[in-house]
Length: 474
Image 1: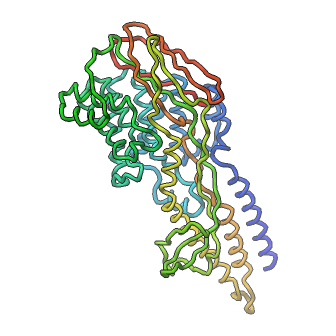
Image 2: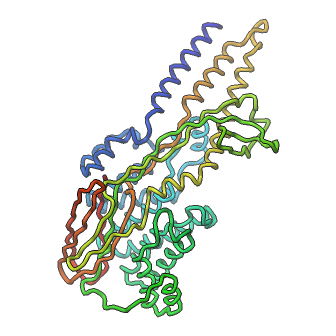
Image 3: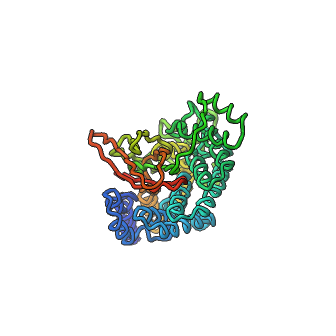
């Protein structure tokens, strides 16, 4: 029996060591060759690295693979392929990801082994890229369909949190984008509604700032202008007072207008942070987990499932975002006649940090409850081995299994460090008047170290609303 125990301990130790070494690498570490090529602007090589990556090819990472393939195809200018991937990702989300078995795997091992379901803001960004792809393919009708899908996504997000102001229950940028899409389709009534919905998100937020973004001046003007075009005088008066702006009717530019989006930098990455909790009774007699500073109620406490004596200390890992400060700090667009500062309309960096913070207590509570149950199973195995063997001696097999399970639980614990990391750090925009025919638009980028860069864009003014997005992914 002693030899059996030694073998179990050696095997569990070796397996635990393998798990530990494997778990040290975050998702970003394992996908680094791909992200390095993206940041360097080497999109073709990035696509090669993406196809080579074994981690992304696993079924549980299918959504991530589709989003990354959609993004890299978009950057390469292959808009048809880009939307094939994004449409598949969209369908995957609509059908639902995961299930009972998927949840069970996450409970037995760790959340990293579950299917990736996407961050809420990532789902909205799929619609952003799909709509741009359709415009670049001269497919305004499908772009408008995408605008309607933004409404459905917004309703789903609102229902998820009952439209609580303190939660990310709407995406102001997506609603503004929806207005722009409708306007490009010459539907000023729906454009007005979308602009109004976007503006109201800002107006109900503290200091009219929504997740790191103040209400854009361009949105204010678009809302008042479309109210005027629809003949909604009372709405026009209302928002003119709110924004302290007086609308002056002007002739539309002969060549139409360009909506220029600037995608600056890269979204934050996820790393892992360790916590050590104990299960105790508070002053009211309720069971809580605490690390000395953080207190998480144990709502699912069941004496039949959790033995308090077994939960002396729990090692818990939780994802934390690490920001990647962008190289450029601000930008200005020019059409040759005048300059227009780019206004920030989406701060993905702030969104990522705040939405993760918002679900901290709930996610940590689920993790701690899961670990407490596992800890009890370890305890039962170890205790069952005491004195249950021949002549009242300890059962080496049960004791060894208890030790092995303890080591496995300790070293297999890993947080989910996956996210769509080629999203930009932030998105800014400008509405630029165009002349009939060819227009040269300059985008001047100001580097944080004083070094500047200029991107020149050629746009054909046809009298319609046009779109262009430029990515500075470093």
